[in-house]
Length: 310
Image (cartoon, rainbow, N blue to C red; front, side, top):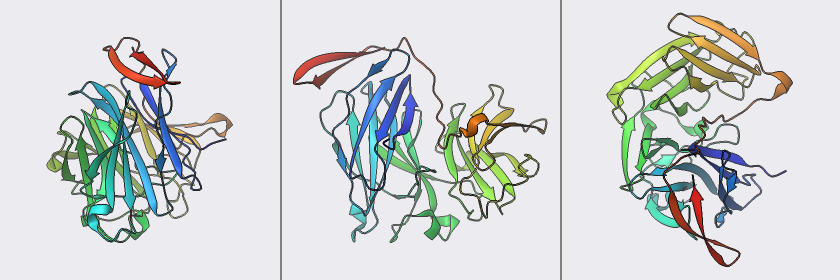
């Protein structure tokens, strides 16, 4: 009955956070390997007050060979910019969250149906953020595309870099753009004038000039005749892409359907989702039975165990 979400998946592990209901002020994360059925104990809890937004990111630190989850905590009521966005990190095997200090940008606040959790790629976590620290970080108060940036955390170095969104993103849409990873490339998708769906992909991570528009297609062409962003509560969400990079799978919560769009040959196939089972925040998962052995001291019931992650 609790509101749990999948923060992310990495190298066969799944990170779950909960409970994330607005009324809850104690939040934890835990890790699970579905292939080996190993489930770790919950992390220590994080306290969230009414004026805080909390987004997470999960990934692997190649330098220390450890799985880590990062909590990005934004306080839009803080008077000082240095207190408006801070980072905490929890490593599998540790007994507490570690303070990582100031986050150099203000992350856009996600919602239960459209999270802004950190996107993992190549040892980094990436958030859609605002370059200036205003009084609010909700998407509804963003008034200029010039405010938007991608803020990236390097797990191993624990340093930050920032780069721009696509130059072709020249006006704000009804909904916050979707940031994600498909085929080991960062992507950004967004609505355009409540009539088109636009998809961008980077050819070189961290280089804003490498954003390439893969397609710009109308909702009508995607056979979403009843889809209107003026009334819709959820944007289209890219779920996966074919190995040859020609076909993308899109999720429509509004139409309760999945669209297979072959944008190279301009072929559209739409499939209704049976039983009204619609995933709001789909995550890509690849199981792992054989992984580099990690040995981490884990305290459980006052006894010290060594957990093996395969």
